Image 1 (tube, rainbow, N blue to C red):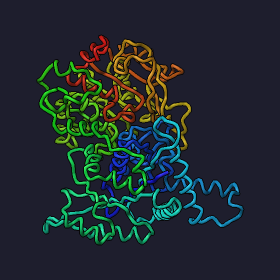
Image 2 (image 1 turned 90 degrees about the vertical axis):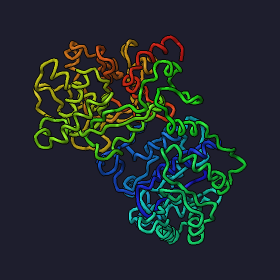
Image 3 (image 1 turned 180 degrees about the horizontal axis):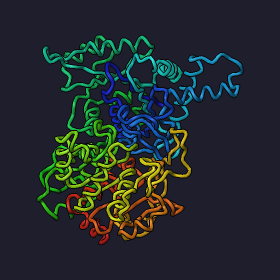
Image 4 (image 1 turned 135 degrees about the vertical axis):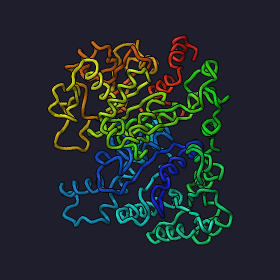
Length: 587
């Protein structure tokens, strides 16, 4: 196995995940099979119980793993399906070592960080890197490892030592270290400063790891004298100093690496020159250019065909380059909280040759109480909602902002505005219709009111009320479509079922399904027991869909999620034509 290790220095948030993903893309474009591992030095065993405000979204894998959002980047960029073991945390490592100690596997020895913790880390990396994630048999050619945090963090020290030992044991031809660092420009001086990177590399070298490459983040392209200075003081050849400067969109990053011949240098370092070919990044080039060069009409780039047929450009030329999407959620203060949703909207919009314009609306600002306490925020929130072409209510936990989401769902239903409710968003629809149409004023979820007189959303019987971590209904689950005559079935190309990823512990109360369907609501998707509601639609509405699963997790560039695509098509008035075109076999 060949390993590419990506570390970071100076500050966090430099884009190590995007850099690691982009390196994987370039190597895959050279004909190599690539897998990825993310190391998170925190003590949590997984990301499942962490606040979105603190750590961004929790990404869910097919096997139910609740992992760091960077694994979402890996899956989207490399089009692979990772496992929960591809996310290594300090908690997982210590848990596995302590379990062995309790079993007596260490034969009475004193269990220490070195060698027992470091050996566990190495064994984990070597075993997980051999798991195929691209649907083919056998291990990948290259494993890209991202070490979270920054060099020098005390919690990452055991991982640094383990990776140093891995480097020594695998040999120089099987290990490549890329260090991501910041080259800032001070406003007063206007000069690109190399000292932070120098100190970061010195810290890394002191820990026994010498970088083969520097990936320098900067606002503008690096000057030649900056590269020379970095080369001289960091002991890295100038040709191996890669510049990842700010770009219009992240799809340009693999192209930046390709244009700097990063693939050639990495392949040489890993002794893979004879195995790999030149990188074929035509699809990425077209995708990046399409996003940059969208015109003011809904039309296709001449070489860029995704899911939509050519009929789109024949329908109209009157649409704006942007489509306004009202995102009504709880965690809008940190956009990374909904990273996969944002990416899925981007994928769908690019497929329609549109740029998404997301209106971030804090659900609590829509509530009546906000009109009294923060009238300006209340007014702006409602103005943004009314000016949007569609409404999306994503997942979340807790009762904060729930009444605002209910008001947004009611607005979308009554005004025929395309609506997509995901997980909590679907449950919000059920609560809103129960209150507004059935007249059940006490309708609520037991998550928000344990003693609700009309519990239309209830705690799942198999859930745990005492433990929070890894106790939800997680991972890929099958949903059986009850009819082919529904929007969801047509968008998924009329299958009998869909397999999507879940993350929830509450569900629609099956005892009220009959009453809800009397209002015109249809539950068109159910689980394999046919007792758990998975998909709802309102046939009298142009596009009113709620799903218990999270379709955003499986959306890919060039392969947008069917439901997100449907939302954008409905927002631009093209959904009906799209579905008719598919039924006529013209796609």
